[in-house]
Image (cartoon, rainbow, N blue to C red):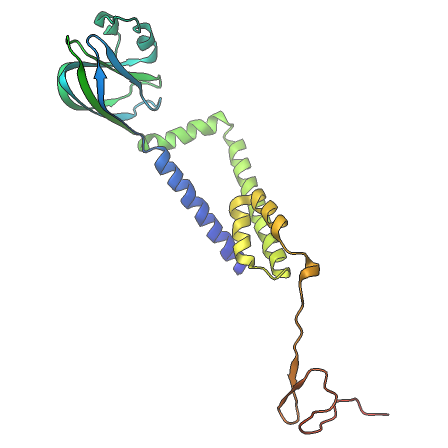
Length: 249
């Protein structure tokens, strides 16, 4: 029962860690405050992910009217010639001109990489603050499927199952070995399951030698005749004189 409980507990820890990692890895928020854009200059930033139908929320504010573009990376690098000519920004998938405060959502039409470009058409510096957040939770399963296809699908499943079996076997062995060496077997089995081979190495390095284990023996026993506590090696009970030696033949 202890081994089963150890394995179940280790699996739960693994799932919690994976869940937390997934949550933080896809909570993509980018924010820039008080960015100074010179006259006829730009502020630009590469968007997070390249997932089709990904939805991005933009929030932009400026002290002066600015022009906002979203364009592919190819169009962006073609337009990087200072001083910038807005005619070069004609190849874009989204534009909004002469805005100071705006909030909008944009859905990515394909899996290319994109940039957001903020152009200052004024003859004085513009101070711009902007942020954007990617919402990719709906695409998470699709992404996992694509990853599975890249690494061979069935092969990935086999590797994961094999790794899980190895972790379970390591946990069982460490549990048994820790018991024999007088250590907390449950705790070490959990460590072995969660960290797999690394946990096994740690246990091998810190486990005590069997030579160092002192097997304690009972120092006393109960006299079956008078019920008193007497030394384990007593031949005759010091209280009732019961003789424990075998009868002479």
